[in-house]
Image (cartoon, rainbow, N blue to C red; front, side, top):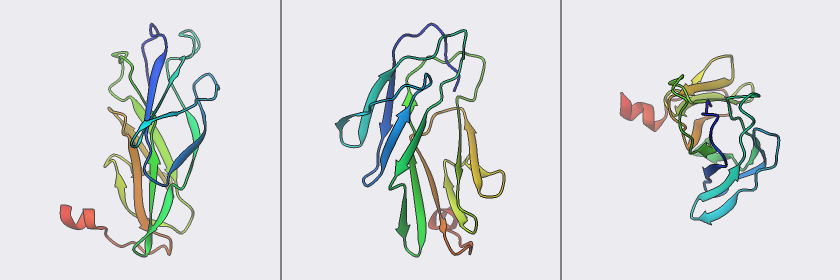
Length: 155
């Protein structure tokens, strides 16, 4: 995500669904990011962005434990996304890019946000003008594609 270079500490927020836990969060400088519970599903931290001459993007890495759960004969994957409150740099309409990989043989029937589409086989990618708070995939582990409730309602 692009950011203006004249900002100091940057607030980071994540909404964590029940049973899901982001672990080992590292920020754009490679520093550990300690997320503090604020109540409900919300956790937050403050980070220092990289030096302006080194980068104009912020990227975070973390593992998500409990992201995949069984649901009515299939699976649902919920991946919380760290969001930041930064002024836009004005050069790009796209402030978020992310990718989710699913194991070979899994069939995905629904993805949220709607911009999350399969690029390479098993890799769902999105580049969006906003930062979503959650990426969600629903599907089956047996490789059989079946329309989900969202698609049925949309049709």
